[in-house]
Length: 153
Image 1 (spheres, one colour):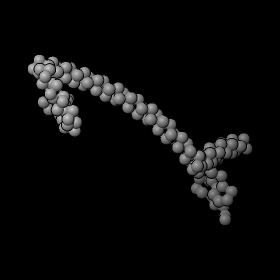
Image 2 (image 1 turned 180 degrees about the vertical axis):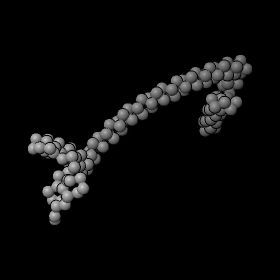
Image 3 (image 1 turned 180 degrees about the horizontal axis):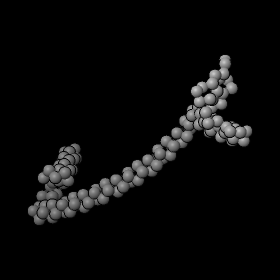
């Protein structure tokens, strides 16, 4: 390869200095140190990108932390929802108890002891019928509570 001289007087080829190159040996040493530092930073970045196993472990640890935080949040939400359901069930139970008490009072006013004993004796003779009637009454009460809560009545 031959050296050529450009119009501005700088030389090109195997021994050419870059335009704006070092003015002396101290300047050249400073440029070399700066280039070494930049090269070291670049090598570190490339090594970090090439460390797939290390990056995967870091990502897995991050996801594990996020999953743990979500688990805590979900447990908290579930506990809050459970308390809300218990409160609503308690209020519904009290409402049903009050209505049953009022219905019992009405039935007691209209029923005589003899009629009640006759109904009990008939029920003892046919326990499946009494069980079915009780289940049907429970379904009716539950359906009416659900409808009332959802504003269908």
